[in-house]
Image (cartoon, rainbow, N blue to C red; front, side):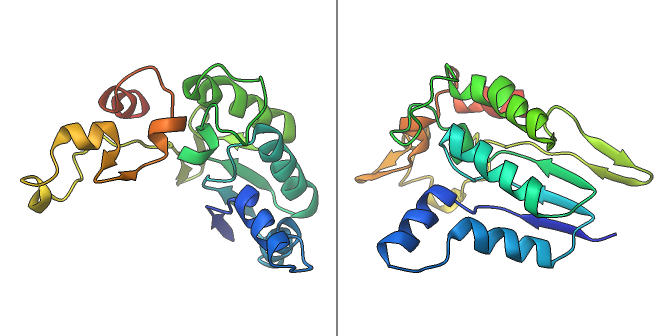
Length: 183
C-alpha cells in the first residue's frame, strides 16, 4: 500500500508568489502532478492549504479529480481554520470552531475527502486518525521561562513579533481549552 502524505501547500500564498515572479506554471498544477506521480493508494492532506474557504474547496476538488487514489483523507492545519482572515471573504463560518466542526467537514464530505478528526479510519491493523492539534504551551522550551512567561504565549506576541493565530484563530475559548477539546 502506498500512502502519500503532504502538508502546507499554502496554495493562496504560493499561487500569488508564482504570479508575482512570472513563473508560468500554476502551483496547483505542479502540486497535483507531483501527487499523482506518486500513485497513492491513500492520499492524506495534513492541512495548511489556505484560509480561503472557496479556495480550499477548489483545491481539494482539483486534487480529487486529478489524483487517482483509493482514499482521500484530510486533517486541517491552523491556516485552514483561520476566521476573518482578509483573504477569506466567505460568510460560511461564524468562528474558527465553526469552520473546524462544520464548514470544513461539509466541504470534505461534498468532495469525497474523509475528515479524519470526526471520522478515524481502520483498515485491518492499520489506523488513521488526525487532529489539528493546538498548543497549551506544555511543549515550550523551559530554558526561556525566565524570559518569556505564559502571558506572552497566550497573547501570541513577544517583542514586536506576532503569531497570526492571535488575529485569525477565533475559537471562543483559551488555547488550553482548545487543546483539551481537540485531544
